[in-house]
Amino acid sequence: MEELNPDKLANEPTPSKKTFDKLIRVLKGLIYIILFLLFLAFIPVYLLFWVDGVKDVGVRMTTSNHNTFNISDSLSTNGIKLSKSLEKEYNKNLAKLNTYTPKQSFIVINISENTFKLYNAKRVLIREGVCSTGSYITLESGKKKWEFQTPKGMLKVHGKITNPVWVRPDWSFIEEGLPVPSARHDSRYEYGVLGDYAMSLGDGYLIHGTIYQRFLGMPVTHGCVRLGDDDLEVVYKTLVLGSKVYIY
Amino acid sequence: MTKILRLLINFVKKFKVIFIFIAVCLLFLVAYTVVSVMAAKKQITIINEKYKSEIAMEGIEYPKILNLRKESAFIQARLELAKYDSVTLIVDLVDSLVLLDLKGVIVHQAKIIDFTKSEVLASLSNEAVVNIMASPMHIINQTSTIVKVPKKIVIAPKDTIEAANNVVARDTLDLNPSFYYFELDNGFEISIIHEQKEGYSYFPLILNQKIKVFKETIRGMRHFKLPEYIPGIKIELKKADAKTVFRALPHQATVILRM
Picture 1 (cartoon, one colour):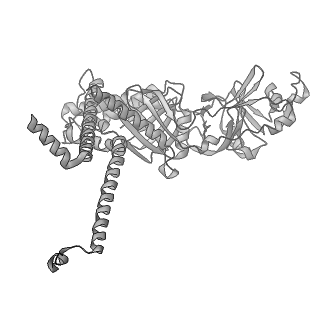
Picture 2 (tube, each protein chain N blue to C red):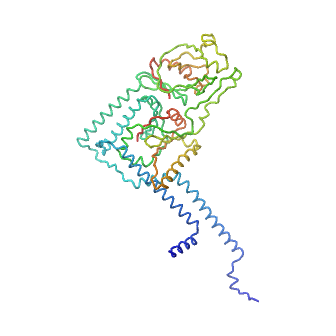
Picture 3 (cartoon, rainbow over the protein chains, first blue to last red):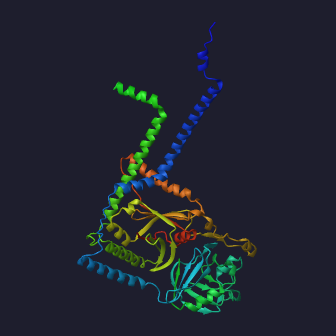
């Protein structure tokens, strides 16, 4: 029979210490696994996103700036001459660029946001507000097609009309599921629906009023630009024949 | 030879495969970064060479003359834009503005909330910067989360009852996040995002853009070539501005830069 050695017994780990060691080992393993997973996740994040920042730092650190400046404010005689000639050229080009700004009142229409800005002849903004522009709807009826888009670009006011009458085109009947009447049929003429004023932009497009005030600010028209009553009056009175209309 | 092999075996035994894997990955990351930096540096040389003046620009070392030259170049480019019938884009990084120009008239002005530009663009020679500003660039490709023209097709109703039911939903694309990037003919890229407090739902497109760069770099590394580096400008605009700018520009719009 083996004799019990008290020293050996004292060195042997107790069951609780054994469990603690096991726990530590498991935790250690878990930490390693988490670290490894973090490293794996770091790789694509770094390659796709963070590398740009590192790249920029790398470029900054390794590129010597070739742009050497003469920090003295005083220019030589040649420098002064050059500076004057450049200033002259700049002012000449700036004046040339300014000739593109209209000399008459003009209006700018944003068809994405359905807003307008009206400027007077002095290029001062005098009114801004909401409008309605083309709905981007394409109406298809058999082989016929109508696209209800407001044209983009620089147009001009070709005509000014008070108390305009709307002569309904074919698509307005087709859109409502009605039979298309003859060209001069009474049902084609509608009074008061275009507001008190209209300005022609060519190709059948108009800036006019509307009885559907609740739709202002929305893309709901057949290509024309609709304004609220008060805005329409100001726009009509400000724009002249030939005034530029910028639509974007 | 056997000694080396034994050393290697011992190494593997000692540090286990996992450490080798990590080492290989780290090595790859370093190589990828180095290649990317080298490609960027090469691009600086290419752009500087491409936009080098035939006759040396006099007085460019003086800040006052450099500024005059830059402003002159910018106005010259704007004059060039005025010849176009369609809307053109002006990215003004000096005043933090994105402008839409139509026949020489600024029709829309959007304040840049924030922007970042590749270090490559900041490291160019002054001469190259002046010449870039003077030369309008053209968009060759546009990628976006929103549609350019929100077209809807409506079939003509048979009668008034069908017409009454034919209500077309409003421009629901308004709700979409705006993120788009323009690839320019000179190799630059301009990305525009709507302000980030509106959410990051455009993330998939950003990821696509990044994956494209990653693939290009890997292709270069595989063939022991430097990948093509795309210098870019990333601009953050208000949501409405971002949508307006994208929809106003035609597919092959002209762009000028002020930096």
